[in-house]
Length: 411
Image (cartoon, rainbow, N blue to C red; front, side, top):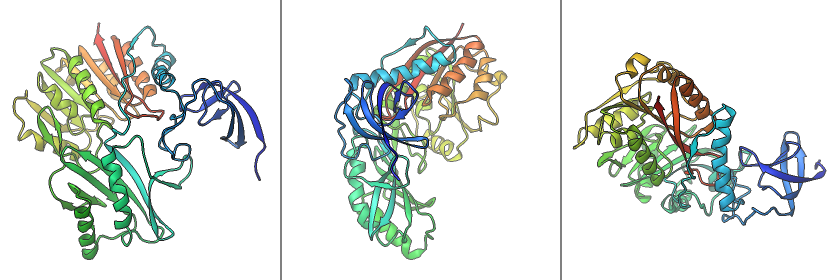
């Protein structure tokens, strides 16, 4: 039974990018000033019709927008969109009582520059659909275009649809992780309920050859490698582990590296916490000795392997350590002049408590979660640090997510 439509006026954009009414009702794909007809079903609201558009509404560039769950804000005019993203950082800090801080203008990047994507594939009526999930469902939008992902990654989808026929079982799903590296595309396939036997291994190796992949990994097993997929940082070629974390947009990564290097200043010895495969480690090692820490064994192994051919850098050590369960203690941190910390979205509360008790002079914090960043920033400020500057970075185009880099100085 269809719920009755209600007439609503949108007064602001909420923190997830949905329009919000004065009564606190969230309506997706709306902007302030919109008069809309909406259908309310339980806790969900569906936009039925825009009766009168608000002043910051614009035409979305992608045909899939509104169905595909990848983007939430293509309908917002660019200037208003950028202001809203910056405001999310200001609001998150204010929620923790942090005000009068320099917030730089939002750093933006061009569409179609994202180098990594995780698609879902599924057989539907004897054809393979590949794309992102619809908003709020498990259905798949069979992508014909994408204005976020790099065209080289999108070009893989059409032949991959054909090649997965006969590999995916009936009703089977595939998780398709693709990464555009400096030396080619690295693909990691997850095929639940599929056993990789000899004949299938041969077929998958043929798939890698037809797609001209640098490397293909399936269910954690290396199937084919034409050459190592590499990312170059500070003149060093690093081969990241299959499916590992990397910054989404190369130009955003370069911006973050520059901010990290500038932030550590003239430090002689620095620590890189949650270092991954070494994007900040190697950039900082041009001017300081660096101790790198991460919980992922494969990421530390990738960084260690890359160091064998590194030249012209200061000394680097890389250690596997779970910084959530065993953060570096204040007494250990006191050996460093500066620290760069880039935790997951959940932040790093325990590690920041130790930093707050340390004598480290300079901290560069990289975060993809303004709310958890603000929580951790409050800990550092209460421990005697001054938050000098925050730079918001929009590498998650048209989504509600935002990256940022911040500099803390011990006063």
